[in-house]
Every structure is written in structure tokens, then in C-alpha cells.
Image (cartoon, rainbow, N blue to C red; front, side, top):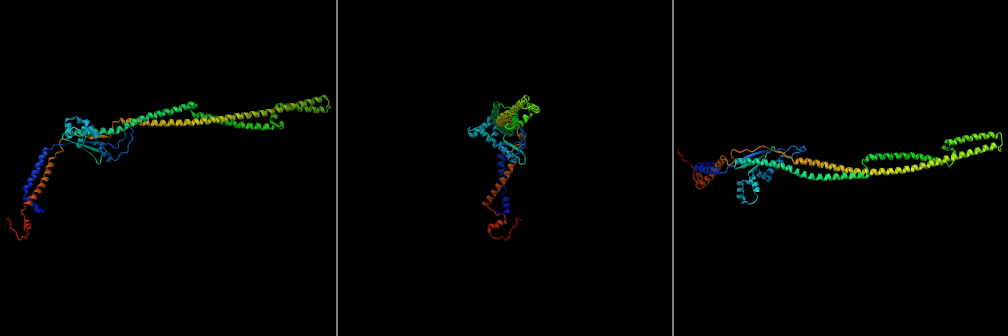
Length: 447
């Protein structure tokens, strides 16, 4: 069928087409009058993704806005938020909702769980594509209730958002509280071990005491080196006493020996003088010889005494060297012992320092998480609260009538085409030619 034929058919059966449109419009208009009116209220919240932490002041790198807002939309549509809305509005105590729950479930199950599904079916949550806004729309038969539900959902979402931030902080605060007790006990034990070791070793300030003992060790070492030189010198002089002692410096410097030698020289000079005058048998010569022999004996005895004193002095030096060497070894052992004690104290002090650092760190984190657990600031704010709508969003009479017109037109065209096929008539030359299948020679006009 061509367009021209269709137009001719519609013109011929316009009454059927008009009746179909009228019937559809009447039905839709009647149904619209009986449809329940629904009102829509929207509350808009803004999510601050880049806000700094109010406790630490640190700015956390924000996540992808789309992903973050999608997560927040999921939070709003969660049963946790819906249960809080039910609590805010006391829907589980409302007789109308209780009756609806009983009709729907026969009184079985949890009414709050049923109300969560009921609320979610009446909510529409959309996040903006180019911002941080989230629209929370509630659709209700009561306009005032629609605005109450939208605002209650926004309020419940803000409260839940804060709880989701605070609850982990509370758990961390409890955990750090336990760790604080453990760290404090570890610090106290480390300090007790250090104090007991210092008390048992008698070391309070190990570095100062070690410096004193090192100074003593250096002094003893210096004294030993000096005494070794003295002992070597006295040993050398003692070895010289086995030969001619008259050449020893100590003997030559001895005043008694010097006096006796002077007296000996005087007596020898006197004897020489007597020898020129008298003979050897003369009493004066014999007395002079006797005195000279006595002087020589005294010089020999004094020289021997000096040599003996040199040996005694050498033995004393050797004994002093032995005693000083023993003292030096004892001081070395003492310094090594103090060094070992200092190292042990160093280890204990390091344990105390590590325990102190751990305790300070845990205490700091405990204070921070405690503050975070008490935070009352959320990163979500209501930008536009929902207001009571004045006009319903459903039904829409004009839209329904327009749809009815289009539907009636389509139904009418379908009825006309079916009727035309059942009762086909000749309305044009082409219809006649198609019906008779013979050529047309001419036509007679209506005039």
C-alpha cells in the first residue's frame, strides 16, 4: 500500500480513527484521575574530598572523584543508613507502615529490614559527573513526608560517614592503649635492669670513671717506662762493681772516700818526707805506714759500702719495677673490666632508649587516635535541604494525554488497516486497475 492509498483509506475511515484516539485519551485521562499522586523532594550534599585531617593537619592525597562518589552513593544506599533513617523518623512505630508490612509479609520477618527495602525503593541517589555533589531524592505520596525522608537520609548519611571515620580510630585507640601499657612495662623493666646493673657494678657515669682509670693506666705506664730506664742504669752500675770499684762515679763522688783519699795522699807525702830523713825501721816511718794502711783499708771499706749500696739500690729498683708492673697489669684488668661494664651499660642504655622511643611513639599515636575517635567533624555537608514539594511528579496529565494521543493514533491506524483488508473498496484508479488487472482506457469525472 502506497502513501497515497493510506491517506485515502484514513480519510475514508476517519471516524474509526477518531473514535480510537478518543477512546485511548478517555481511558488514559480516567486512569490518570485515579492514579496516586507522588511527590519528589531532593536534598543535596557536598563531599569534601581534599579536606585536611583536623587532628594531624596532614592533607591526604584524594582518591579518584568518580570512584569516591560512587562509594559514597553505595554508603547512602546501605541498610546501615536506612536503619538510621527508620530510627530518626520512627517508621517502625508508625501504624501505617506497620500495617503495610503486615500486608506485605504477613507479619513475618524483621520490620526494619522490610522498611529498609521499602525506603530504598522510594529513593534515588545520583552523584554529579563534574563535581562533588550528591542528590538524594525521595518519592512519596505525602509531600511533607517526601522532604522529611530526603532530609533524614542526608542526616543519616552524614552521621554514618562520621561513624565510619571515627570507629576505626576508636579501635586503633584501644589497640594503642594496650600497646602503651605493654611499652610502658617494657620501658620500666629496661630501666630496672640498667639501675640494678649500675648499682651492682658501682658505675653511675661509666665514661667519666673510665677516663679516670685510663689516666691512671697511662700514668702507671709512664712511671714503669721511667723506672725501667732507672733499673737498667742501676743494673749497669752494679755490673761495674764486680771490677775496679774505684772508677765508679758513686765512689768517686762519695765525700767520705774523697776525704780519706785526701788524707791518704797527705800521709803518703809525709812518709816520703820521713823516708828522706829516717829509715824504714824508724818508729815514725812505721807509724806512717800503719796510718797509710789503715786509710787504704778505710777507703776500700767505704768503696765496698758504696758498691753494696749500688747493688741494694738496683734490687730496690727491680722490686719497684716488679710492683709497678703488677700494678700496671692490675690497672689494665680494671680498665678492661670497666670497659666491659661500660659496653654492657651501653647495651642496657640502648634498650632503655629503644623502649623509650617505642613508648613515646605509641603514646603519640594513642593521643592522635584518641582525638580522632572524638572527632565530630565530617567531610560531608548539606548544601540544599529538601523542601516540601508543591506539585506532584506523578502522574503527569499532559504527558499522559500526549502518550494517549500517540497510542490512539497507532491503534486507530491499525484498526483502519485491518478493516480495509476485510472490506476492501475501490477508492482510486490504481485500486480499480489492481482489482481488474486490465488497462484503463479513460475516466469520467465527478463533474
